[in-house]
Length: 404
Ligand SMILES: *Cc1c(COP(=O)(O)O)cnc(C)c1O
Image (cartoon, rainbow, N blue to C red; front, side):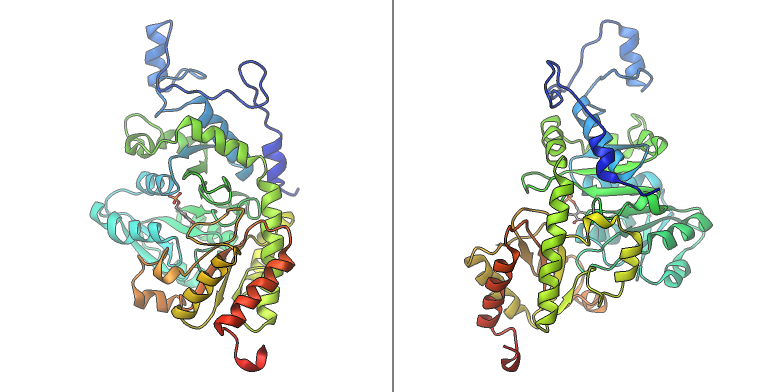
């Protein structure tokens, strides 16, 4: 049977205290009890439906977590104050001093910095690999390896992870496969393909209005209970708790995610095809020329398309900067990091979001100077957008004279 993530979200209904069509927001950090015994049981996590203190849990956070678990098809989920606030507790929960992680080398800059610079201070080492080569991944696994880590579609190079293949490796060596699915919500359902844990930065497509940071960990009840354990839970003790007001607003935005993803994908597909036929080096998983086009197709929930992210290479950082400034001047988008906004956002990853990655490593992974990463917006008339972008490119001299 096909997995239909948006249906699962829509099947959940929550009402407010007075019959409101949205759930009431639990605007409290602490909760009263009629009986001292129930208070103790709640602290120990043994009183279902009772709340003690909002760093532990709050009704608003549980609603949002439940909706995201429904989207990913996991038993449950826990929401966090940011994407990094989801990633770091999961890795610290799964790994002890002396343990080892095998990670894709093309991952979000913050995650890379954590694994490369911070986790070794705690005795947790990481081998970075080309995640598209399963034999390279397998060769990096040691008896100390506990986690396989990747992004379903990687930032910023849009490499696609073979989640089914990685899940087979994870099973074989008794590892946890952790997938950051930030770039492809609804399109890819990693747990359905065999992943153990799915993480999102809610900051991006899922919230979609660039007004907050947030994160989520989707997994088994056992894992989420461990993360929230008052004695040794990393999410509980590191304290990256989302505020209830925020989780209520993210839940409302989640209601339109399926419509937004379809429009992001539609617009990105249109532009990627045009840019490619104009002769620009274009990377988009929806293009037949993408090395993992067929793999993405084999994993995707078709309706939501290949996502809103694409990259082009305009040859040099100077041209990239000039083009981005001109496009911004013409109101085609914003020169800004992040993604998933209604407006197109563009940045040069080498000098921004991936600048944590040393230059020689950037080169080895194919992150070139002239690369521009686009998060394509919800433009109503993408044909007009394309024509205006093309005019900017011609003005900047992106094309050789004969192709104009
Ligand atoms: C933005 C991002 C993160 C980090 O999320 P924050 O909400 O900024 O902490 C992690 N992974 C990916 C793929 C991202 O794009």
